[in-house]
Image (cartoon, rainbow, N blue to C red; front, top):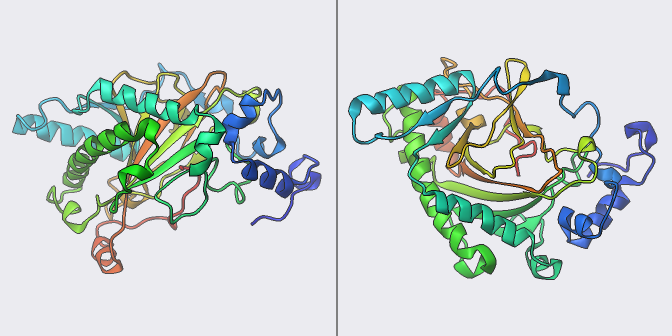
Amino acid sequence: MNPPMNSAQNGLNYDREKELKAFDESKAGVKGLVDAGIEKIPSIFVTPDEIFPERSRSSPAACLQIPVVDLKDLNKNGIRRKEIIEEIKRASETWGFFQIVNHGIADDVLSEMIDGTRRFHEQPKEVKVEFYSRDNNRKVKFNSNFDLHQAKAANWRDTLICEMAPNAPDSQELPAVCREILREYTMQVKSLGITLLGLLTEGLGLKPNHLIDMDCAKGQLLTCHYFPACPEPNRTLGVTPHSDPDFFTIVLQDQVGGLQVFHQNMWVDIPPVPGALVINLGDLLQVNRNKKYSIIDFFHLFRLLNESIFNDHRYLWFAKSEIFDSIRPIWKSKRPLQDNGAV
């Protein structure tokens, strides 16, 4: 745990640990602050200048656009499949990010997942409090900032966290208000994720089941983020710039927008595309020996004038150490794996 900060350290004169403790023990999250009618954000949420991305380095949408890969006819035409693999490979090498359309998950499922996330977070505190926890052994929990007591600044978000695989929680452990859609969405995204891992693997010149057979799609973590309207949106972030410590993340964002990726030394918007999902390559697909795939920092710079929602479905790695030894020759990470704010 970080020692209490003072004005000499961060330019603000307050007892940081005391405020962190009070916020955490309230178990109300950021939504609780908004419901209380605050007009200024608490000091623990003020983002230091060195963390805040430079606005001048943001790119207009017309200048750079994240690749969009159409998965239509993936399994109907061998030629089309090769084209899709090449598109994913190119996007992975140059961006580390891409959007996919015609992925097989119906629009009504995506919409209900967004609505289910909203329903959970907009419940009264008295209903949500039973899920509030920082116990890593709990498969289903709700909190605000997994790294609340370690980060330099708290992010303006609340999160429902569900470990859906390899050992799924009992149905009754999931919040009743979104239980059915959590199960349905997870089932469909799991199937899509296995397909994507196969395509990414083929792009590396391997057999499509190479990583799947090694249980590299076994672990799945679903995080349902909620970003309430903020009274001072220019002083805080929804998510600090970071990369993800996983194979890849499937991101479902609402139509508010705010997701950005760092590319060619500037921050590029990833505008919401109806029915699309965003694919973010993680540290475990970072770089192979031939440096075919790239990994870059991304973050969510939400305007925070209106509420915003997005859902992450991560493909983690729960394999044994001997399996990692067999993966190691394929690629090698540049830096130690660590989570810098993705949950």
